[in-house]
Image 1: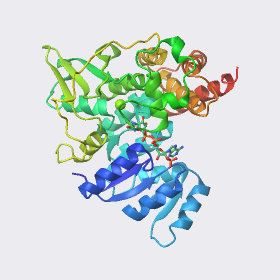
Image 2: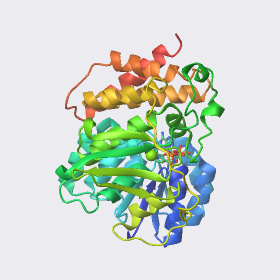
Image 3: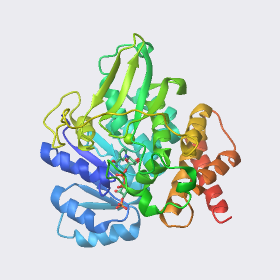
Image 4: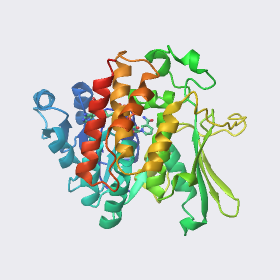
Length: 383
Ligand code: NDP
Ligand code: MG
């Protein structure tokens, strides 16, 4: 069990569930970081009394500091604040629950400070997975996935002594709110339709990613990086019930799966207690009522984001950063009702065609690819 945690992105969906788990387990919290939600951050600071609180901008940090005058909590802002929270001395574990590329540098900083990383921020591994995993190996920092599929795989691999004995990883995918729909039907779906996920309640960006299936594409790359496997050894199967969280097929044909009710507190808690387990507030799985369990092939014609992600996975280099950066901006525009559903893959495609590819990139080249991808989407979104 960990002694003290730092939660990056504490006001979000994963962040709040992390604090719920920490409170139940009695784990102290030494740093909290948020983007813009000052009100929720004040509540969390009063409830958890961290030593450090961070907001995205100086203005928001000042607003928080004004509200927290009566408490001995240091308030910082921006990247400097995130890095301070990620490397805080008393934290032995850092939960990376910010959304998007902003999580990359703090994650690298936490790794270099030898923290255990409870990794929810999948964009980090999509953009710079090779770099992140190499740094983790170099500094001996443990990365425990929080994403439910990767937590399932992590658990199914627990007894595996040699990755050569793994034939493939099988990621399950709920199919999102638009499973079974045609391309024609999806042309005019609204953001409200896309935000209605059948099984999980999550932040807005990942919910849209689930509707386009980009989320599963990002998760394929996340799995490749976490477990050092090529694309050919990672497959995706649609599983509407979100009961089987993912599977590992071994070379002898044995297939191991982790099942559970769809509640992120289970994988979050595991990242805090591993290798131990303890009671969790997630509802128990009732095998007599959770089925029947179905498995289908993903429809990559209707959901082209999945193929784009596969293409980026195959290319490696800066392709993941371009895919993820372009997608982040496109999803942001979709959430503002400025573009349509199929503009998301179209804009990602254009960015992938336009931004120069770099093999084996360093951090600077990854950040530059991300910047160019974002620029490409902004330039093309209007026309
Ligand atoms: P949310 O949108 O709910 O939360 C995101 C958090 O990041 C909030 O605390 C937000 O602050 C903060 N944030 C946003 N932008 C910035 C910024 N520019 N600088 C600093 N902080 C920022 O997202 P989720 O919790 O759903 O997802 C978090 C990560 O976990 C994502 O990478 C997602 O893919 C992954 N994940 C999420 C799952 C889920 O069930 N939700 C499941 C598996 C993975 P504020 O709200 O104050 O603006
Ligand atoms: Mg997932």
